[in-house]
Each structure stands twice: as structure tokens, then as C-alpha cells.
Image 1 (cartoon, rainbow, N blue to C red):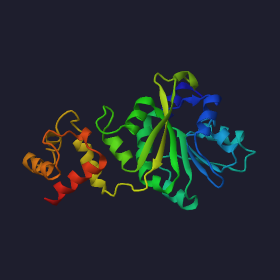
Image 2: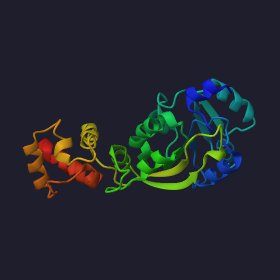
Image 3: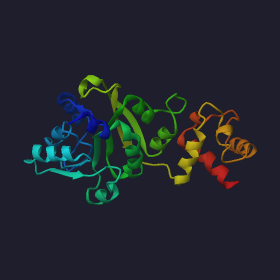
Image 4: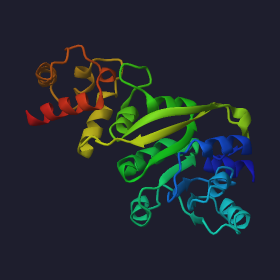
Length: 260
């Protein structure tokens, strides 16, 4: 595959040994199925298929699709779809495949977009084991008061609990990326945050000036006096920053501000 094509699709192919380890990290049970995102050359697909579970792979690159169709021609539990995962109707697929696992070595250039799409549907799955750039994995798993906690962390924590599983160096990929990677297990919360979509726009505004107090960062939406009153009603300090608040606390602040 030529370099321009790899750059276009953000492709870095994982070695077999590491792929086997990643496949073993998914706690599969009899009757489970898998939706694999971006299988590439099938390094992760192969050990998953070897466990006997049905695997539906969604791959944007037609050359990889042709390669995988040939490679896994003898597997009755393999199905591939040539489509951009951001356009793939995951919700429709889930109606026919209840409670699957999601897995994938996500292209760096669209990893956050893929996870953002998956999060509202995560409650219909067992979970999502994904590999992303290490710094992105830190944001996925970040807790309040940490330097990596931001609007993406809130979006994920509203729907899931995140756990970093493995840190993976560039030497395990072809071609070698310039960054470390990590795998993250995103497990659906039993009580996902019940919030309107506008709340997540509110969260993005709250983190737009992360190092400033939330009164300043939300001043694009509300008068500062109103924000100060809402903080007091929520029993938050006037010097509170967005990074100090959990998703539940941010939702409380949002609801107070909307009600005034």
C-alpha cells in the first residue's frame, strides 16, 4: 500500500503478537458478537475470529476490503462492510446484533469522532475496546482535577467508565507512528447521564478557556452575575473551574442556569 493512501486513511498496521494480546483483553463469552472498526489487514480480526465469535468488520479502504475478503474467505463467522464508520448505521446494526462488543485500532485522525459517535449507543453493547493515540487515551480516561480532563472526558464519562489497558510503542506498527498508542476499555455505565444534547455544547463552552474560572468561560452564554448566582445555588466556589467539576456537577450547574 502506498504512503499517500496510508496517510489518507490514517493507517498504521499492528503486529501479530500485540494483536493477539489485544484480542485476549476482550472478555468474550459464548454467544457474543463483535463489530470491528477499521480492521486494516486483519491482525486483530484473525485472533477474534479464532475464538469462534461472529465478526462484522467496517473498513473504509477498498484495497483492505479486497485483501480481507480473500484472507478470511474460509471463515463463515466473518462479514465485512466497505464503508466509512462515521457513515455506518451502527444503531441499525445493533437492532440485529444485540449486546455485541465493539473493537478497533482507530485511525488517529478520526478516533475522537468515532468514539463520540459510539458513546450514546454504548449502553446497547458490552463495551468498546479501542486503540488510540496515548494522549487521546489519557483524555478518554481522565478524572476531574487532572490536567487531561476536558469536554471529551465529560462526554465519555457521561456514558461510560474508561480504563487504560496497555501502552503500545511505535515499534509494534508498520509504518511506525511518531507517537505512543494505548488501548482503552470503555464499559457502559448502568446509569448514563440523562442530559440533552445542548448540555454537551454547554460543556464545550465551559472548557473553552480551561485555565480560567467557569464564570469567564461561560460568559459567552450567560451574564456573569447569573453564573455567580448559579454557582452559589450549587454550592460551588466562585473560583470554580470546569476541570474541577464532574459530569453530574456540570449538569447540575447547567440545569440551574437554564431554569433562571
